[in-house]
Length: 221
Image (cartoon, rainbow, N blue to C red; front, side, top):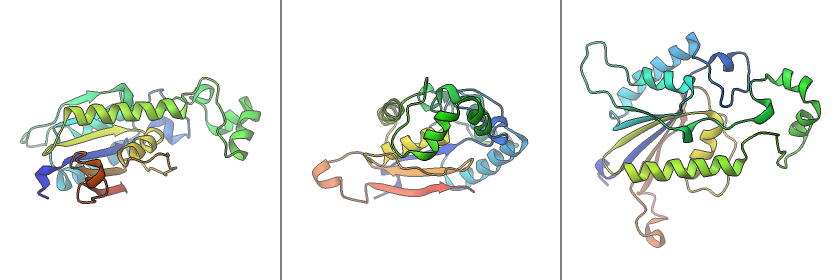
């Protein structure tokens, strides 16, 4: 199939934030990028403009670390040439809320909530965290965002979306049509690139790999 028959969707994790640097469970709190995070974003920008078409839109979580990362991707070139995509903030792309653990390092959490942390470390079954967003709610957000994206964009377009490691696990599963969420270690500024040619006839095209292509999967430039 010709490349203009695909919607090219790139899912991207933000650069290192101040909270990441000290190991905080930031969740839906908002801290700025570190100097390293800015460097990571600039390096990824160069990679994106070498390997990807300029997108129709760059979606981002509204949290500061993702907004700053997206702004670096979409900043004008030094020579002022080239059109830059609009940046759209979407709350459905924000990180999963970790409830009472939000803002804590793991060491702090072990002191404040030792029994809960012990359960989280020893049980494979879901341990509810008071105040936290459930996996089902996060999955629903991912499904909503993806359906909205497909409703707004189509073949021949490129779309970037900047989000967070925890939420991206759900979003990747939704894009792949997977009925479960796999744990994936997603480094800062990692990229997942999917080419999608629409749903077609599910009985015929659902198993046709020409319609669905993984071009990059958790790649850091």
